[in-house]
Amino acid sequence: MAKYFKTVMTHFSRYLPPGRVTNNDLSKLMDTNDAWITERSGIKERRFVEEPIATSDLAIEAVKKVLAESNLKPADFDYIIASTLSPDYYFPGIAPIVQHKLGFPTIPAIDIRVQCSAFVYSTQLADAMLKSGQYKRILLVFSDVQSKLLDLTTNGRNVAVLFGDGAAAVICEAKECTQEEIPQASNQSSGVIDTILGSDGVGAEMLLLRTPGTATRGFLSPETYENGDWHPKMDGRVVFKHAVNRMCEVAETLMARNKISANDIACLIPHQANLRISEMVREKMNLSQDKVFNNIHKYGNTTSATIPICINEALEEGRIKKGDLVLTVAFGAGFTWGGSLIRL
Ligand code: UT7
Image (cartoon, rainbow, N blue to C red; front, side):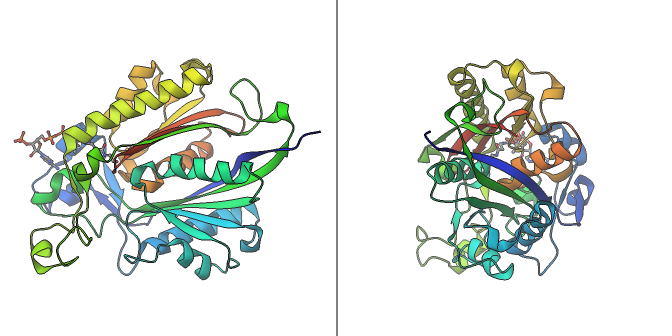
């Protein structure tokens, strides 16, 4: 009989640094207030690391948790895919640092750079690698420390109030299956059913951290430091519109091509960029409040880590369970975007 492989996401973990920063705390650093931040974004607080914590340190905490939860050892993995926009160094990425510090064998370890679309891009990549039969178990790592990049003054307030630090880890396993057991929306087989991805560099300058970079004369200069080009900059209104449109578009396409309606989905897990964006996607899909999971009020936008943090927390709270059909949608800098349909 023909042999197939499917990708099952067996374990999720999250790590949020302990340092809570409320909207009122930010209002002591810049001209902002709790009412504005709550009304425009839904955020009440976020977590910031303390020195000398770096992005790989958060990632390592999340990976330790997922290893403990799964009873697996570093030797049980054959690939690491890490996602971050805030690596410890300009190069190398964080994946080899995680590999080394946690004693993984000398397996391949790569960073991918798709910002807030990290979960959907990593899922698609791991799914293709596992389904091909080339790899057996892949560790996905998501970690970002935005707090060290942000302009925490009034100049940077439109971006600074949105982001928090956080990390997550996911274990993806290849499971052998029959043709009938290949995950589909119409069967009960656990695994990644479908993913959809997109990008459009027309938005590259609408959400970016400009320097250090080779587009800057001299890569890094006192001028670019002085004018704040080392902080993330965003045209918030434009990004907002693109995010809503693309997230709705991928949700509709995934539902149409898998022949399901919103009723078939146990939970929509949107990237946590802004509660208003999540609400617009929910309304467009005609979903009730209880069918969407948000935690942006507690953590802000943790960039690469929002969706796996949400899935981990939703599982823990009993909002979703093994066997449920979950739809994720994401949008981020690049522009990049995508969605995934997964049976847990
Ligand atoms: O994860 C990657 C994708 N990211 C996103 O999708 C984020 C998309 N964008 C957004 O979430 C929203 O555009 C923001 C939350 C960033 C801003 O909300 P907005 O409703 O689009 O506000 P705005 O930028 O149009 O600003 C409205 C006003 C401005 O004042 P004036 O010009 O009307 O006098 C801003 O200067 O609010 C002012 N403002 C603030 N006031 C208090 C901007 N930021 C702040 C602030 N506190 N933090």
